[in-house]
Amino acid sequence: MNIVLFGKPGAGKGTQAPKIAEALGVPTLATGNVLRAAVKLGTPLGREAKGFMDRGDLVPDSVILGIVREELARPDYASGVILDGVVRTVPQAEGLEGMLKTLGRKVDAVVSLEVPDEEIVRRMGSRTVCSTCQTPYSDLAPGAKCRNCGGVVMRRSDDEPEAVRNRLKVFTEQTVPVFDWYRRNGARLVVVDANGPVNDVTQRVLHALGK
Ligand code: AMP
Image (tube, rainbow, N blue to C red; front, side, top):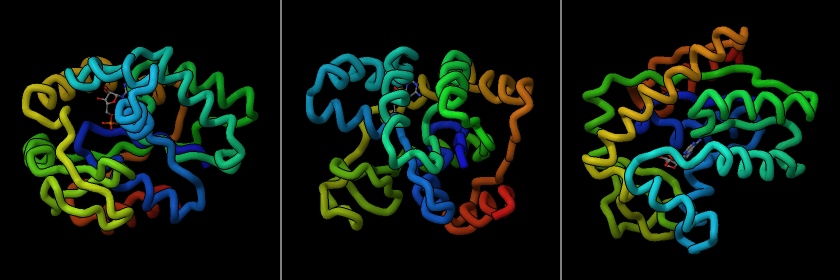
């Protein structure tokens, strides 16, 4: 199954993706995680992406589609993928469709995680992430140890108020049209209330997907 997780920054894509992936037996692909790892390592990709990310702007489509193309070619993704953080623009939706087509596949569902704005602002204010494995947390302070890998938990530089405001604006302007694009192209759209306990939201998603 190939699933696109859709939702505002802070809607819970990074929290839900691994849980949905585990339940469906397919891996996740999170472009934000790939990019943060590249920034940390100081690779050419990381150096190119860092400025866009710190401002809360989108990294160019050509860079994102390059990452997706490279990853989807790996055998791990042969059975499907949960895409977390792609697709964020219409050209990305078109590019992904072309890539999947050559593999004889398509996007099986677009799952929109819906959360009220007040809740997004609250979540972003207290969110941390593991600097090694990228697991997101709402209950660990910066400097704490990651429960998944033992790495150091930190704030994301783009979770500060100015970058968050820009990310929400970018979402409205560039990412909302993606949902309409999928609607026009006959994709299966699944809207899920993502406000509530993490496991409840996972169950809602699986139920909505008929799993
Ligand atoms: P995320 O972890 O998904 O919130 O992504 C963090 C940042 O990485 C975003 O604010 C963008 O700067 C960049 N990024 C991640 N995925 C994409 C994408 N599909 N298109 C453009 N930029 C992206």
